[in-house]
Image 1 (cartoon, rainbow, N blue to C red):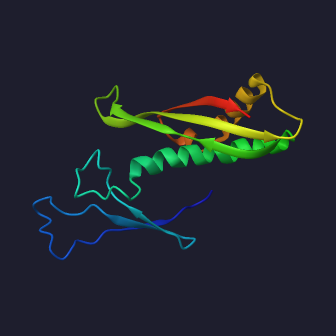
Image 2: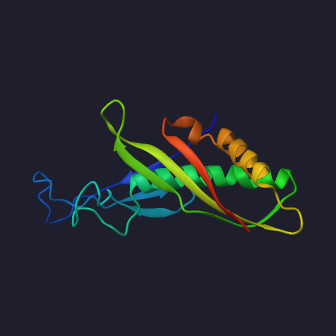
Length: 157
């Protein structure tokens, strides 16, 4: 078993009423390695100026965690098969909408992956699809959510 800890901190601004819901949703995520990330609600959920557009929002972090987990397992799968990867890019997209229960949820995340392989050993499209499938099955973040996670192979370079 593993345990992961994050401290989330929000402070009311000096001039904010709070009770009128006109307060900043900007806050910080403090990770155990010492990194602090500026976070906020999404401007698509809470309008500006109460959201901080430049900050990471939970929805983006959710999509990023799925993408990152998949990528890390993909790199491992490829290395075990003796492929050399020079670059991996995922332009991941999350779709938030009303789900079958009537709740707003992240219903689908599409991983739009482009991988650059080095050397003469290049996977076929079928091999690449199998590696992505195995990576998806091993990704414990994907295994933890009900969101549909789809991988689109954008290009093989």
